[in-house]
Image 1 (tube, rainbow, N blue to C red):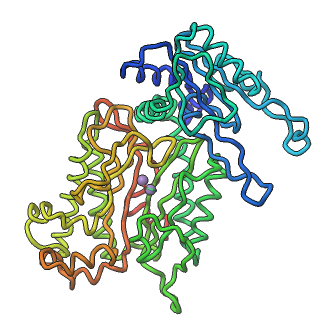
Image 2 (tube, rainbow, N blue to C red):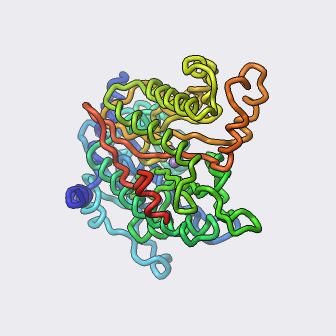
Length: 467
Ligand code: GLY
Ligand code: MN
Ligand code: MN
């Protein structure tokens, strides 16, 4: 597997194929005039009141059509001649002493899937010459707020600044083999980091030590960036979905008693592609009875939801399946009472599983093209980041959770209509858990799926690593 992965990644990022697919998307929507796509990289920006650059994050539309991580670069794709031209910064004699020589045009040509590489000083002349080659009949497509003031679209029939962003976002949903390999690599590195983080929890006394181990393992193994700010939350903080503090002690204050669990939601980014993985581990090395009960329900939610994935599956139905399993599990524990159907219809399980089952994953953690409806009146589906049927080639997270968050559950306990469905006495034993979420990254295929995530999640395995 590693050899296959490494040999795929030794090839070039398929920028040209992406440019063709974006153009096909535009054609299918009636844009039939000769098309020219124009994209800009993220600019080098300085921190306010300081001469240090801001942390650099490449613009995703630019990377998708170039595979290039250089700032201050440009790209032109002439669809009629299928010619992709990359423009990179030329040597600036003033900066060589500080930064060394920039990438040369011939190195860039070897590295990227483009037809030619020119200096950025040639962008306007090249745009003018492409426009002239089409006799003024071509349309140039660009992204409205990503065009330099110096750029000139002269000699084109039209400049369309409204559709390219959406076309790229839609095209990104279906990943090719190279992109899946990048996501797998990000997952492999992140699995190592999760294992190291779990092991570090044995002796750590503060959340930040576990976070440091995770990040350090990612960097050592080739993921310099994190896909998102890691969530390292112990005890009741595990009930906060995007907890960012990561600075709390792992012991109950003033005691030698460790808190119940630690939830780690973290993933490394590999050449702009993201892993997004959540694991929950017992801080004592062994799950308490209550955490084990909840963990088993969440693992069953995840396993059964993953098992039904394949091309064309309706994501709302998979999300509803997760709720059904949660309801059955919480009924068996006595936390919920009533009939499964009634609890489902009244949306009571939303008190314990308030977020969506998952989201597309790619160059963004919450990747593009999911068409969410955050205005949905139905609380069960409002936060679902993907709506509709999943195409083959999409990569989606499956991340069910059960949380004991007072802020979310207490209104249900106080509601005259809904309080009868929750047993507060039994619930009392579960607040200490915080939350259990288990999150894997799944590649949807024609007949099923591939799980890209190898980080351990079986109870015995997690306990063995944590003890
Ligand atoms: N790590 C963010 C999420 O799971 O959506
Ligand atoms: Mn996620
Ligand atoms: Mn996550």
